Image (cartoon, rainbow, N blue to C red; front, side, top):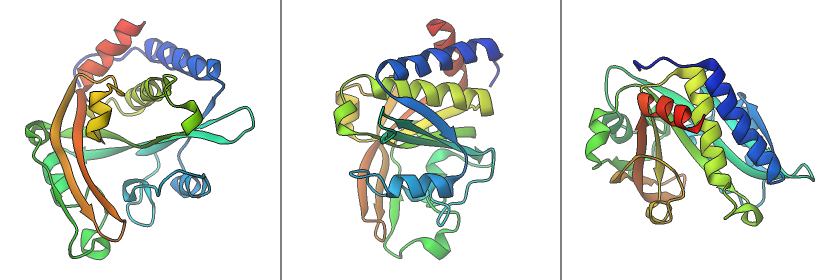
Length: 225
């Protein structure tokens, strides 16, 4: 990423989103231990199974290369979760990483089912390289939906990823309905990001690819400030 990053601007950006969450009755916490994250998410009613992308038993994340965000309500109960991790794709691109299943499993030969597959048709996925921050496993409890928590959480992920990694790209995979409802404020999206089948996980998705460049992250924070 070429544009310089102002630590003060990122700090203000994060503070405003943190205050916005507090205004909705949610206290945010950031952590780095994904064993702890999985323990929390598995104990959270109505939250589906955590993606293998963020499960240490399938895809370990080195310290400093991933973090999670959990929001607690006034009763200290989990109201939202999200996670992020960094992929080093300097020797490849996002489309290759997805289709090889290494996006989901550290060792596909060990963990993938023989019938597992991922097809990536999004044209831009082949141009997404370098340091790539993936944002995923997003969930908001039903009673907090429709209140802007997706935008607040996306802002926290954007600011934290920029501060920690200064990535060349951020990306996410999401269902068509999130595009139709404009759930995420992101400048680029394409269909066919991940036509995915993970048999043992019970996953069969056809997600869009959502992404932005590092320079666009910096400009968004500048506009916000």
